[in-house]
Amino acid sequence: MPLRNLLVLFLAAILALLCHVKADRNRYASTVSEAMDLITYHYLEDVDYRQLYESAMRGMAEGLDPYSSYVGPAEYQRLKEELDQEFGGIGILLEFHQETRRIVVMSPLFDTPAARAGVRAGDIILAIEGQDTATMSFRDAVELIRGLPGEVVRLKVLHVGDEKPVDLEIERAVIPIESVLGDARRADGGWDFQLQSDPRITYVRVINFGENTAEELEKTLQGRQPQALILDLRDNAGGLLEAAVRTCNMFLGDGTIVTIRGRDGEVRRTYEADGHPLLPADVPIAVLVNRYSASASEIVAACLQDCGRAKIVGQRTWGKGTVQNVIPLEAGHAALKLTTASYWRPSGKNIHRLKDAAEDAEWGVRPDAGMEVELTDEQADQIRQARRQKDVGAESQQASGKPAAPQETPPPSPDDLQLKKAVEYVRLQLDETGTRAKGA
Image (cartoon, rainbow, N blue to C red):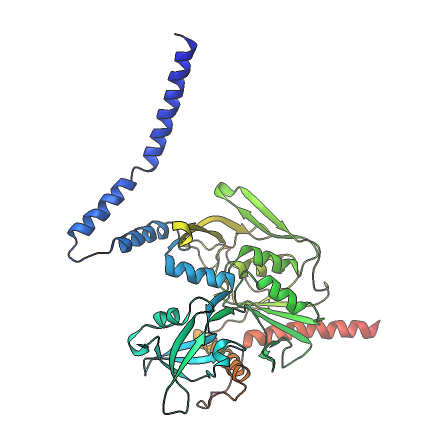
């Protein structure tokens, strides 16, 4: 047989093989499409085709693991806002009042369109764009208030203490979302990062790891010379891997930060400290965590613990040691949040908690010896509420320039036993350093 014919047969065989592989991989696509058609035509009630599609996508992704998911257009916009740390809005914190079924302003944010328009804590939003808020969900209310910067939103607001509502037209702006918070608000709207109970201690709360978190933290630490640092990562569910890595870099002179592994344990990347820390190595650090500290928070806590740079105080963390990539779909209007890798501590241990993992198994980040402080759910909620009231009360007064609306007498602030333990540790380190300095 001529060589040319052999080449033609060989290429035909390769093409047939590729077609077979592709057909085998996509053989279920036509069945899914057929099922959607059958449901549309035969189900008892009308079904939106888009709804069927999104349900199928969610089922496919969520069947993989607890952290993979399909993110629809509405959810994708909120996810981008969370990670980008900004959104188009007027700058107010809202809550849903269960008894009145109304949307209530918790606080206007400092120097935002809402604050400049005279919105105050305790105000009731009666209508948005002419729609009565009594008939809408909290999520719908938030989405109506948010929108493109430069556009106007129309609100009917009942100011606290007034009898008649007023109509407000407020132009939306880009509202930045802070991820690095301090102990108390200053008069200029910024944060005081010195612990009120002991100004020698710098106290920093990181509530999530977003696009701007590392830059915010750098600005906080630069220009000041902390004698001691408490880094509060409690209730921080994570965020961007790069933000966690940059955070670790601020405290390490050298060493491994985290290792990323793909399928079959293949090492994809090992992040190492760049050798340019912002804090001297002799500044004591305590990192606060609880059982809701997860993902990027665990990267930071595990790294600083394994490298001997900080003491971990509080409760064992969540145990989420996997990396999710957000893959845009539908021309960037939706996305697939897909688990693509796992991350491992500098010690080589895995953080991830498997489905049936026992309590004594190796997962999460445990507090250092003598630093564990367990809280009941009730105690933890009381501490969150006290912190929330402190933050909101301060923000409201700073934003409007007026005292916050009178509220019922708040209960005494609960003892934050985890924070107390962290303060005890860094104070002891400061006292020992001072003693050594005097002895010298």
